[in-house]
Amino acid sequence: MRQAAFTMLFIMALLLIFMSACTASLTTSTDPFTTTEATAIASANPTSTPANSYTHLSQEEMVILIVEIVDEIEDKFEALNNVTDTVNGDNKMTDTANHETLALLYSIQSEQSNLQQAIEAYTNRFILISPDTGNQLRAIKDRLVVAAIPIDDLISDLDSGIEITLNALDDINEAWMEVELGPSLYTWQELVLAQIDLRETYYMNIQPRAGQVANDRIEAFIQAHDFIQAFLDANEDAIFTTEELAWISQIAANAEASLFNTGDPQLFGYAEAIDRITRLIVRGDWYAADSEMDMLRLSLPARPQP
Image (cartoon, rainbow, N blue to C red):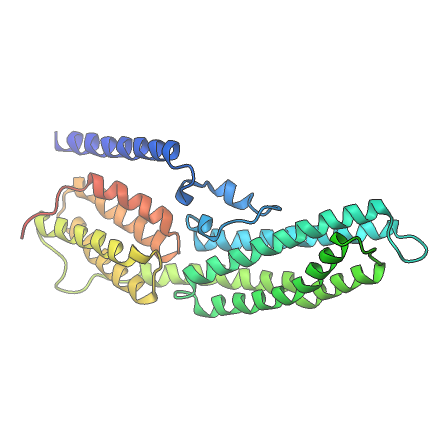
């Protein structure tokens, strides 16, 4: 009977979350949290993307997005090189080539703006748990700003009706090549992804503290609520520190051990949920962790009074 009651309660919690999400999507279409992953990745287009639209992406997803934007920029530079085939013998471009060049330059300029915003969003959110990789990315952003100057100048000339020569395009390509953004980012991507895995291994292997494993259901439920509160406190600014990761992981280890220690299979699901949420937190997937936390809060009985 208790198992069936718990199952029914959990199902009702899932339904409440689903209905709430549907209502939010209908009434707050501008809420950045309602943006899907596909929309964020598709944002690498001529329209600049607000930095807060990245808040639902994990650290790993942000890394992938940044590299994808760079790949898109490099593809457009290759297309820009192909336009030079239409250059006249006097080293000037035809009207058609000018139009094509201007469209590509605007697109590259917008992609570079998106890239700078994505880099800024990444560093603002994750630099406290990955300080070395965050600083590397900021250095890459500084080089990107320098490479964007010739593009801005050339767009200004084209808008003013000045004819563009092959030499001007060569200057742009040379500035981009000097940045070496592609190789730098691919190395950075490998480093960050490796660090995420190492961070997960370290924090998920934290053991419960001696003397802090409960022997009864009431104390186990209190520790589960302590875990929820620790997450809410740390997530108040939507940014986690390494100290907060260690603190949450320790509370999670204690709570999981206490729930399993009761020997009540009905409580094991709570322990498994705490483990999943902790794993998401230490991997930098805070939006997903917040969603899972809502499910845990709805299904967990009220905090017992000590």
